[in-house]
Image (cartoon, rainbow, N blue to C red):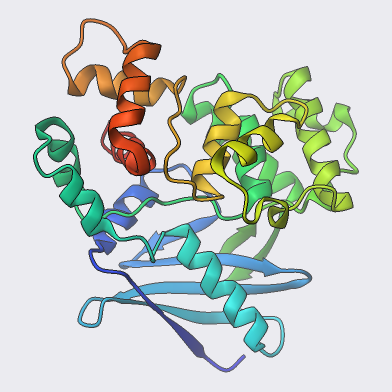
Length: 298
């Protein structure tokens, strides 16, 4: 396929180094970080594109190079790829407003200054966001990544490029046809297997899709998600934050956030619900970014 590139504008502050460091710290098989670039496989319906991202510092843009692809890259596909990456790295977000808001907040400023220019690395694909949250419920992140890797290798798709495998996240239509016994091989609990299959079936039939959340408020999105079997406060909040990009979301039961706040404010115990309500009101629109910066630095 003829080499082509897409150039994406970035709204102000951006650190590619911090972004790659954050991504490289994950036990993830959906991308590869090497030589200051990021390579990943992206699927659009039955077509797959192997993409390489590079940062052009002099113009503050991301260049998306198409290394391999299924046929001609249509304008529609270019737009889908562009929107995916913009959402993934929150390229349209105004980081300056975030930094200015916490300029006189010593504790949060200290966290911000450790990773200045890092944008909230989200999960644009809402099916991936929900199922990854289900996989990670109430277990350590290191073990969750082990299960996720097995899940992707068993039900996902890949291409070979220069001796390496590049994976796509499993298609819900594939997972929806899996038997419960097969998923037990991943060491998932009985309840999480049921949650995973239920969500996959909803996406496979089209009863659930990202477009259903268009023009909905944060509370409407959270309530819609919580109607789904197996999705509670933490999962609905996480998906609303990292896939739907609602900013004023406070994950009041997130262990990493609670432990981070305990350390930042030198508290004798993890903050309680009243503390979190206070922070939620104080931070408002910036709740998601404070949470992400705490995750990235603790």
